[in-house]
View 1: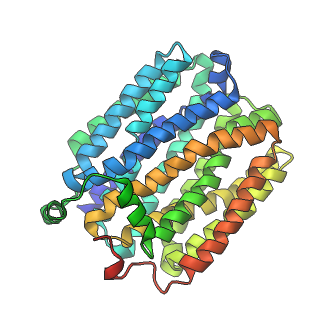
View 2: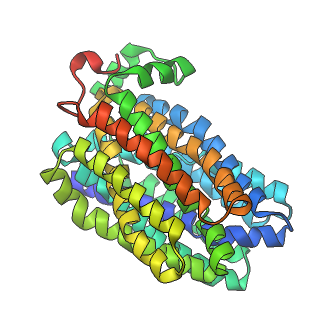
Length: 401
């Protein structure tokens, strides 16, 4: 029965990311359509992230209280509405509105991770979290390539297709996905009587001996990873003159690499190596990758650099969330993963704008060099505060009360 639920979650995330990734190759084209700059398009990504930054912890904590299923349904409904608005957008202001709505209801992945945590034990959690990464990768294989191809018939065509995928996803969840949160867990949550989310709760969580370092590592890794991935369409256009269709194919290539990592490597790696060692290795590997990204002189080099980038991102992003879910009580998994997602969203507020500014004002090498510095410092931090720990799982006194 649990396998059936995992398959359902896989298809939910796949359809959600397919719809999302359809839009990515279109971002530079929006600058031309609305006669605005690439920096403004970077801000478009930032407002999405700001909305997600605010909403994810709230939805995460609410999923601990009300259950995972209703939160997933709300998020999918919001995404559907945002794509409809985007498809009819006639001004840049309406486009910003659509992205704010989408970001405010974009917590499907963190809630799905909480769902997987509900139905799996710690031993198999990293492997099953890899299913989300595989679904993510498959979405990126098909989405960017399909979005780039359909953009030839008009920007609205891939957008309305994304809306249709979200509607199909909504129907799938409504009829196929049962609730994962047990009555016993809900009783414990009700006894805690915690507010949905507060700044004090975030600060207290970051101060915890194990959860805090994991969340800090999550933030700084995501800052570097998000910068190089979100500005790639602008980077490819500025440095190599690539159009939306070609950029879509390259992003699809990244999706293929991600799926290979998630389906064939995560399970094997998580059984052979500790979570803390994989987190450290992922950090170092991405640091090496961004240096290659900064120095690349042709598309062939970029395609080679994408291999360790996909490996680092696939391993780190899967293992870190699995580790976070092991570091808190079952009644706090949704809220803590929501905080994790929110911190990642914060990087999407800063990274796209900062990355495009570095790209335009300094040079195409600058974002890669900036990210390399961040990752060197992060590797030192992970070595000191995570790798030196005996175990990634928290002691009872370290769990969120």
